[in-house]
Image (tube, rainbow, N blue to C red; front, side, top):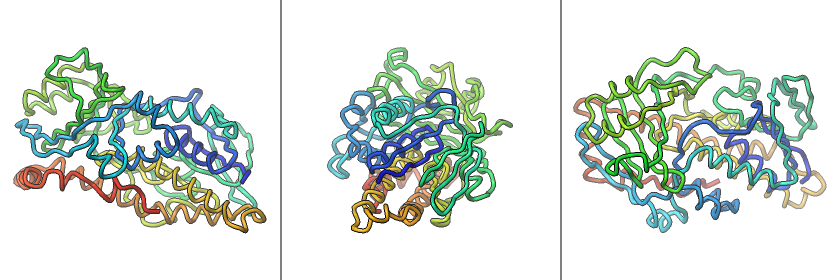
Amino acid sequence: MSSTALIAGGGIGGLGAALALSRAGWSVTLLEQAPAFGEFGAGIQMGPNVVSVLRDWGLMPALQTIAAFPERLQIRHALSGTELGVLRLGESMVQRYGAPYATIHRADLHQLLRSQVQAQTAVTLRLQSRVANFSDQADGVQVRTQSGETLQGALLIGADGLWSEVRRHLLGDTPPRVTGHLAYRAMVEQASLPAALRSQQVTAWLGPKLHVVQYPVRGGAWLNIVAIVHGQVPADLQNWDHSGNAANLQAALAGACPALRDLIAAIAGWRLWALCDRPPMRGAHEQARGRVALLGDAAHPMRPYLAQGAGMALEDAAALERLFKGAASQPQAAAAACDVASVVQAYARARWARNARVQARSIRNGEIFHLQGPARFGRDAALKLLGERLLDVPWLYGGAAD
């Protein structure tokens, strides 16, 4: 298939879609509104379902040079420091699901995908190109940028994030909702930390109305930390990278155990995000309509309590590749060049329920992480008794069944 796909957004999801569609035989024009490609944020956890996608794209050798591959995920009580449960990662994940569990800096994953996309002759990357509106027509999609330029394509993918313009024009719905949760994020070189604070595993500290997650990135040389607390959100929600006040975070964690307080105190610079999301998807109509499909946060923004936001975007991209390859292999494809709208709807049907399930589970996990009063004693007892059975997620880590 030699049709042109237009992609709005040059983040992890948009680059993943560009790579996937080029592998399916499409010419791709990716439109990024920023003046330079880059990725904000800090670390990403990638379950074996996500690593499998990158492996299938031939990226495993490069991934092994930039990511970390922890051996265990540990749950600890934020107040007492007590270990509550452990999930074996490493080789155990490979044996169960065929791929490891990895942790990586967002910028490193973005650069890995961008390098691979730039090597594809069928992909054109364009900066300072923001989609203003589009028209889904019988023979294709016409996109108009804010600069007044008009582009034609057979397909439009909205991968333009939480505040997606493509979604706004496609669905006409309300802005994302404010969760009331604040995420303080930091990355620090492990060599700069006291030996007792360095770690090569994933640790989640659970406390009342808060939790902290830490894990290695950049081959284990750096430590990524995110602390999530309940609080008042900044007025400017779309400027999602704010300077965080270390004193405010230390005050929120004043009752934490010494090990956690020491970790937080050892880091001077924090960035603050106000977390927003949308309710779990209600049907395929929220993932695609006509020749226009949404991908990643544009379709299903989720809270980070299942560590699958970027993962679901990459799974979306992989589904597009499989479906368009399948359509192109059909006997009628040569004559009809496949019915793009039908494949787009098949994509929506294949993806929306899994994305909705991950969204719902992420919300539920946040409620469990932040339990207060007697309920948290039940949570802690269950983790101590069942441990890995509660922490493993076979339906997720086993990959999409689409």
